[in-house]
Image 1 (cartoon, rainbow, N blue to C red):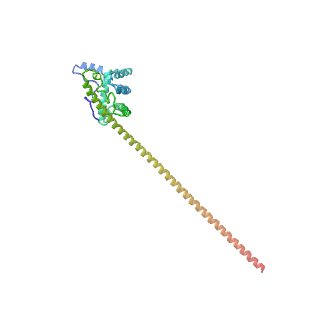
Image 2: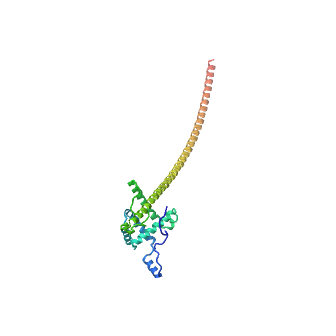
Image 3: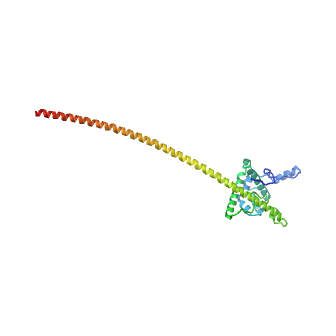
Length: 270
């Protein structure tokens, strides 16, 4: 991801003071205290709610005033300029971390909030582009408001050339942002496909293991039934042999009696 900024992304939110007395610097710090994590989270929550409005208008000054008012309602006193400067700082730092492919995100406590804002923004850009059937054409910024409201939106006379140059840079930035968004969307799609495939493979393996277990149980059952059948068959054969032996014994006794009876009759007849 290509970065376009003119200052260190990790600098403090307090603007550098000109050389002067220590008392003057202390008074400046009292007037502009650093942002706490709780205050920054509230600020990002409000900024996320108004992100669509920032994308749809050139004149963002009323929006920063609205954010300042919302923060005051929550007990945080910040001017619109401070809110705007804080947003630029957060965007710059987030861009630096994204350029390093996420390295250092642990040192940036608001990485997930920023990623959520820009992910939702890119989804809106993709939907808008799909609906229009042409390139992304939105008013506002793709990353931040680095150039917004300068010269009151280019309305002053005699600065048309500067306005065109700014517009060209802004369009180029939006184009790059869109391309990066599409690339990230494809990467996310590929990642999800791999996750789905991995889950499907795991599910298939689980089903196969279950099938094998059931098949093995069925085989054991069949073997047990076959052994029982063979045992019953052996028992039946043994009983059948005993029955035949008894019948043969009775037949022999009957033949012996008949033979003896015939012999007696013949003897008496003589």
